[in-house]
Image (cartoon, rainbow, N blue to C red; front, side, top):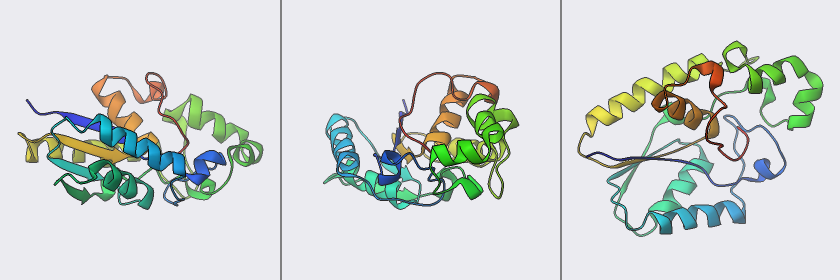
Length: 179
């Protein structure tokens, strides 16, 4: 039976600063590297045939730390990049809340109504991620896969498996960190 493991990249500098990352990148913190090491140790007795990762440097570094000395191929897949949050990228949550409280509310409380300025909405992320997930599961039917990605992408994947509508995206299991 095929297994699918999902994980988010480790903590980054911008996570600590409460900044939206989106497609921009910030480095893993020492704690973020430790988190990846802890997960590597936790998964050491699990069979993983293939790691698929967002090409974002924070996700790729996390994937490499998780792989450690194991002989597991890592494939970078842009379908698993974080949501493009447009002009919010690099701004703190407080700045965003102050600049546009209505959009900030929609982002967290009514994701099905959120539209980013110069970025993606949740529907676009879902249309990018779910077909690719289905393709990978069919392409590697007898392989155990680990996907290393980002908060919104993982919430989209979890909502798919849990059969939750987009309106309930942020319900369920918490994924630490900001986009």
